Length: 113
Image (cartoon, rainbow, N blue to C red):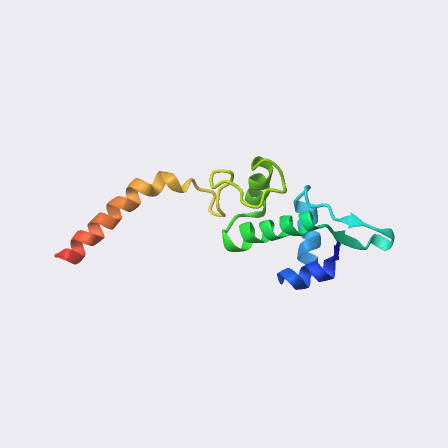
């Protein structure tokens, strides 16, 4: 078990962010001992890493990350499916694929000319 300070230092996330995430993600519940000291279990650390990846690297909103974790079969899953939640823009990117392909073809023909 690790303290909030150890988890924060190990993952490069500020302690106040971890406390905020505890409010936003009901599945993130580290043990609290007397005096309110938080102890993160290994599965809590994995969940924090997953939340950090979804929010800070993949561009999910907090709501989208929470939905991804809830629909991926539980909070302890380290890799949610791509269709579990939408990125921060809130759009289904697959609907734009035909338009993007058409733009790519026009650009390629313009460069070839």
